[in-house]
Amino acid sequence: MPRSLQTPTAHEKDIHDPLATLRTKFHIPADTIYFDGNSLGLLSETVQTRVADTMAEQWGNDVITSWNKHNWINLPLTVGDKIARLIGAPEGTTLCCDSTSLNLFKVLCAALDINHGRTEVLSTEDNFPTDLYMVQGLQQLLGERCTLRLVPEQELLAAINENTAAVLATEVNFRTGRKLPLAELSAKAKAQGALTIVDLAHSAGAFPVALLQHDIDFAIGCTYKYLNAGPGAPAFLYVAPKHLESSRKPMQPLFGWLGHAEPFAFSVDYAPAKGIRQFLTGTPPILALAAVDAALDIFADIDMADIRKKSIGLSEYWLACMADEGLLEIMPSISPDKAEERGSQLAFEHEHAYAICQALIAEGIIADFRAPNYLRIGFSALYNTYGEVQQAVSSLATIMHERRYENEAFQQRNTVT
Image (cartoon, rainbow, N blue to C red; front, top):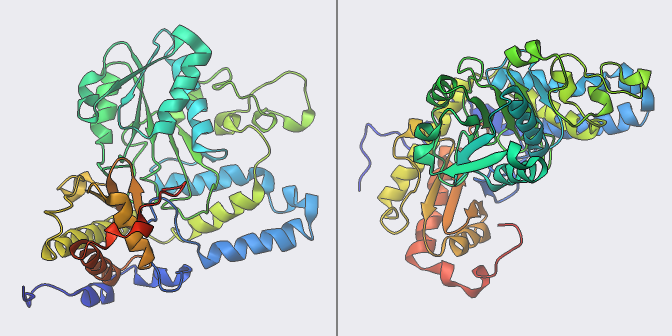
């Protein structure tokens, strides 16, 4: 099909991309097109430099004095404030620490305590499993004081009722990429007296988030996806100001020494620090936090609306290229048709999705697979280009039309898929 003179080419789109220069800040592996930033973001030069300096100078030369000299002791809060800017939260409400799962445990306990008398945690059947596992573990610990009810994603809003203590929802479905309407979710929860806990793993750094505006009570998320902070980087948690201000007792049960009001008084009895600091537990992992801190610097002068605009542009162009290649008939999209209802990813269904993904990787095009049979493509506006989209879809078309995915080498399942 000849190109319309009114339709920009991939090259033209890249030339006029206002975010194009950001790509130079990242290490792009040789001969690689990377569409897996929704699983693990790329390494930036800023992170490399910061971690090296933290090791050689701060740890190497300044050793223990760095807790004061380089303000290591407050790094979870200073990094948290940088994240807060990206998720629509005020300063002093966000903390970078621990893992997403541990942070979820903390805020689940806080929510059940605030909504004492209600026991139900409501979530979706297709929520990310580890979120559901944490509720199940808490249920085992607390018995009848915590119950988990799961409903289909499309029924979540209607399922909130007077028994619901907290609604636990991931804003972007990890399989389909469907973006839940947080404003509607929060309004319905508040009308029923329920609290909201939102997982932002596929939101933070991918598009604008407005926690305070939407009156979200708690949020958690990771930093190793769209925030590009590195494998296993510390996660974050958010607590609405109204809860921090009204708290008169410990909000969560993991009484760590750095969550104490006076940690270096070494008191035998626990007394929680004021504000978000009480959600700290053990000694923060400074090298990892330095990586998060540096990774967030890239966002300092970026409008998240521009990130969102390019993300949608990349995903829409991917769909257009697939349509031109006749691929959507043989591997249909399971993501919402409307771009505003998606996060920053697309997913496609095919019985050989795993093998197709492996065939792409063999061509230097990194995507990922999600059970049971979905090929997932993640778009990072910071480093992906329209030219990469065109090249990747062209390779995908060859793999599909020549049935290269049937190669025996692509059938063996790896531990990590």
